[in-house]
Amino acid sequence: MNTLVRLVALLTLLAMSGCHGVETDRIPPVPVYLPFNSAGEWAVYGTPGATSWRLFVKEERLPAEYSFSAVSMTGYGGVLLCGDVFGAPVAYDAACPVECRRDVRVEVDSETLTARCRVCGSEFDVFSNYGYPLSGKAASLGYGLKRYYVGAGRSGEYMIVTRL
Image (cartoon, rainbow, N blue to C red; front, side, top):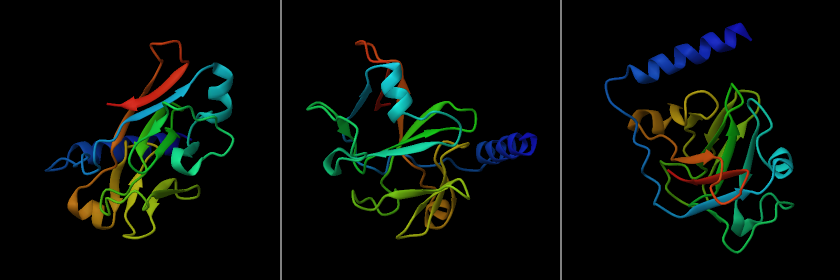
């Protein structure tokens, strides 16, 4: 685990010391509202710990057992909810920023702990470096995943995912 923490620190340092920033606004601004109304609901459908993840796409009823409401909205390509290496929740739009299509989403590889686009082959760091591109066309163009806010809700929700 100590090696993992060192790797995370090195990757973060490298990303922050680059000559130019990463573009994270390629995905169109589409409403996001994904509430978790209790600690129990968060335990079942949220991210229970480090390097856990779940994809939410209302139009496709993903995950099937989550009860989307009439006001639930899952962004442009869906919400990729992740637990970072410390277990803190982070969320991204699942649409690949290179392809900019609702139906082309990044998929998490549990072995490499990266999210990868099946079309352009770009890989993104979703667990330790906030959606920054690691390889592929996204890395060469400087396109990162669009991030969303995750935190305590103001209207009684236990946790909520909304636009930043």
